[in-house]
Length: 374
View (tube, rainbow, N blue to C red):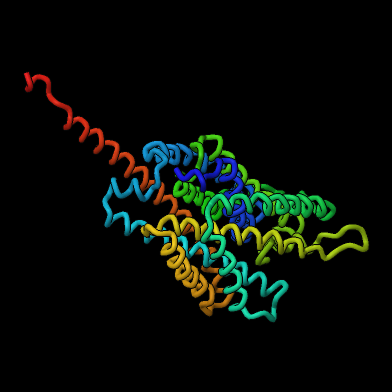
């Protein structure tokens, strides 16, 4: 364990709150409302209950790998070649995750407050800042996250309380207006975010203590609250029909904020929230990719990380319309995230079972037979 770069489980939970929370708090809300309408919040609660069933899988992998670096454990389990292939697959998907986050952030910035600024300039500037953080270490990112998250939470409570005057909770009724089918169909959008808890298994050797049931449960509950708050807020403030038409419902809620008759247009505070969340999320992804690089020296890792960051920027700058990207996000990326990380945890569980049996078998073979010796 690298003591100089270790963090506590509590710090890891806060990282999940910011990094994964951005996806649940922003990206998943629009697809949820579009699919399940006013009942979208029910889908989020059902997902939370189902997500608790994943906790034993995480704990099993953590126990069988003895909290050692997963690539090191994989090399002993499936060999170098298979480990390299799996590492490339994980890095490839992390690149897509970072590109989607950056694309959504730049699109929002261009549409909302920087319409005349070239996207290329914003992409390069933002990815550079994230790259600088990615070349440091997990503890540095965790410490910075604590400071950023404090104000993210304060502003979140502020917008929720300030908009009470506009909320009509009768818009949540009738419940199950269109039956269970839309709810079941929308489960995957919330689950795609919760499934990302898997990425913290890649950092288990960076923790100064093992993750327990309460830690995983806390992450799941926090991610549920982060979705439910702005989701219900959008429905009760705009109605399910209007909220379903909005590209970024959580941001639109800031447009309603006013204090009395003379203080309004406080939506600039949301810029801090979104930019901080995107920065922590992309920086964490870069740190994860650096952990997955099968390179020994830190200098070579940082050089490789530079090229990976440029690859992320290149994906973001692919000229496609926002309508096409939004449709792709809903129909492909969010469902794919769920299936990818679900398949990953199941694969690791299978490998842990196989490796455990193989290890027991080799141990038994090495034991001397006392009858034959006699």
